[in-house]
Image (cartoon, rainbow, N blue to C red):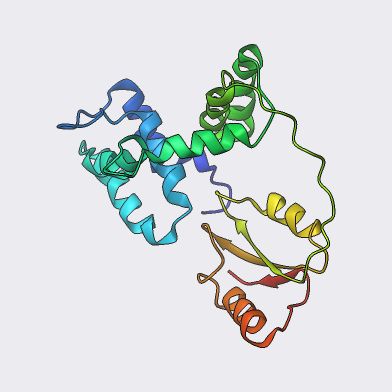
Length: 219
């Protein structure tokens, strides 16, 4: 990204504004809206191999063809055979994994607040908190505790949209003797995307060599 250029000034923002005014009709599918595009982007950012296809789908949507975006989000909302919609599992896991329930009045304030801090994704992610607002409350999770376990390698990614670096780092801190290997790359999963992280895992599994804690791997 050129210096000084804000992320909201890119083609994606232009596409979102266009779709807010006029969604794209898709034959046999849900109309492609700004929200649907954001869902496709958030889902696709974790898989580096899907980036070219995602970029192509967004470019087509900019020209009025929403078929690519529609196909990208179809597995999230439509089940096939014994495979339920992916969003079902995400909803269940997410809402059962935390006892926090954000009141609707607080959500209304969070949307503009997050949009100001994070112009591209803030409002969308704040709205996602609404999914658990009406979910039955769960028992509070036990406080984190240090676990006495054999040494293990914990991998993290600096720009991982699925398992953020902060959460992975906290998990490693609770595992006695663990070694955190941080990949300075984007996408979900440092293994096998990072040769450095992959080599560290292979040495650990094959030779029993525990890497130096807080090893940093280049992008």
